[in-house]
Image 1 (tube, rainbow, N blue to C red):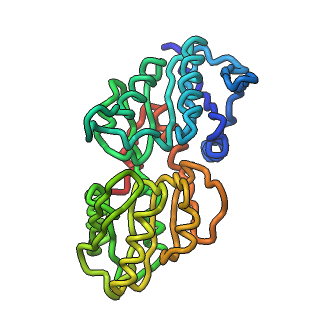
Image 2: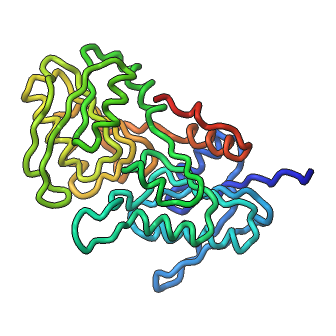
Image 3: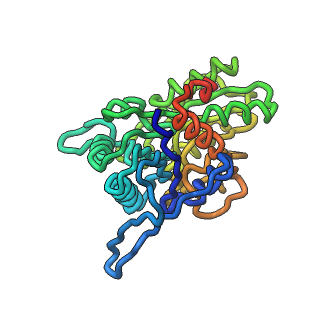
Amino acid sequence: MPPKAAMKIFPGTQTRYLAEKISICSGRELGNINLIRFSDGEFATAYEETVRGSHVFLVQSTFPPSDNIFELLMMIDAAKRASAYKIVAVMPYFGFARQDRKDQPRVSIGAKLVADMLMTAGVDRIITMDLHADQIQGFFNIPVDHLYASSIFVPHIRSLGLSDLVIASPDVGGTKRANTYSKFLGTPMVICHKHRSKANVVDEMRIIGDVEGKNVIILDDMIDTAGTLTKAAEMMKQEGALSVRAFATHPVLSGPAYERIDNSELCEVFVTDSIPLRKPSSKIKVLSVAQLFADTIDKVYNNQSISKQFVI
């Protein structure tokens, strides 16, 4: 029987902070990779150690700028050309996931394009977390391990010891997620119904359900400009909620997001480190996904089931 392929974990430039945590949790050192930048902004990736015959895991979230997705593509290409045995892209945050369908004429489906580019580059497997839309897994013709932050969020929600708890969805699209948490925790659920005239702008919102005298937890897959989230928190407080907290996997936090959260009715916002925070905030608390990804990488490498990674 041939010897088992060696495992090597390499970090992308902008996700090194998380890759280092994953390496500590897994008890493995990060591999050496170098990003060469030219004066015109062009860059190239080069492995500084052999990956021939190795099971290579590349840790890179593809948040803006788009250099991050292109760097990952070049890491995959370089590993393939260096004769890696298997190449796994570990993408805690999968960028362009909101472009999962053609919802108006003459638009691209960005998530499908990213999937096509990753497969063309030569990736063998994807490990990601809380995709904006589950159907994105079907854009790939390779295995996709789709993890959920619930394994981190649920224990933390319980540790808060909140009475009269209500789970809320910030929009109709997140109803399935909120309903799953609600059933698992044995709590009621409310929904925020919103209307947008354009992206990142909420024109109208109303609360469906009772929040009076309740401690509300709003669940979402990401926080972008925080307009929806802060408006929902304001309305819930107006309708008699005792407190409003938010749990969101990916802290995109663009534009006025930090100012909105700091000046909002939210008492706490819990996010993961799938994307690094641009600046500190007294209301934003970070829960690490490093152990979750370290365990998953180990199970994938050893051909073990990852079903135990899911709480709900």
